[in-house]
Figure 1 (tube, rainbow, N blue to C red):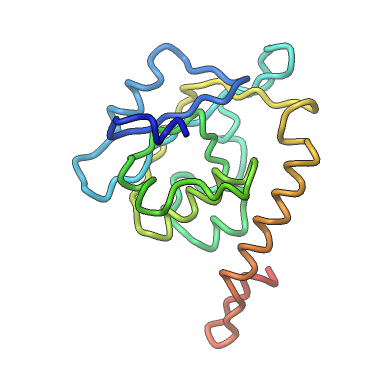
Figure 2 (cartoon, helix red, strand yellow):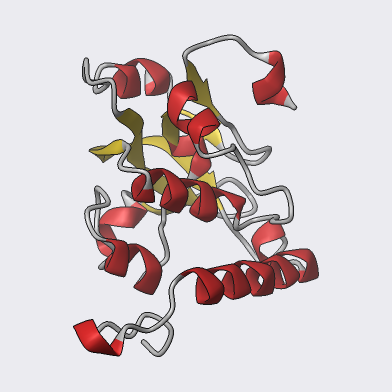
Length: 174
């Protein structure tokens, strides 16, 4: 609804318990290339707990997940770990893939970024924390609603990416 009400060429989201650092949007916007296929740019995040206390600086940098996204196989086999509050998205890319899949709650962002990747929209990664991501046991990420959404997303992935033994690609199995 928010995207539908906006008119900007770029979209930025801010989850209710996250926050942007002062130059977040400017730093992301500075990475937008002149390419007509630009899809999104995102940054690392600092992780905070329920009380708003720092847990980890540059949390994405401590994980083995690939940034920026370059491989379908890694996008599927790893969590996308593109925190919506840390991204700036091209409206053209967002709209070209149909926006969010509204059946999903919590996985709608992974699904969106995967569909934009599959549609060959460019992505860039800023290897610096430009926002704070608050995650804890009371977060929506740990709700029954999120678990149900995870099953819907898993079924969607399983139906979209069958195994291909002729090419030795076992996306379902692996």
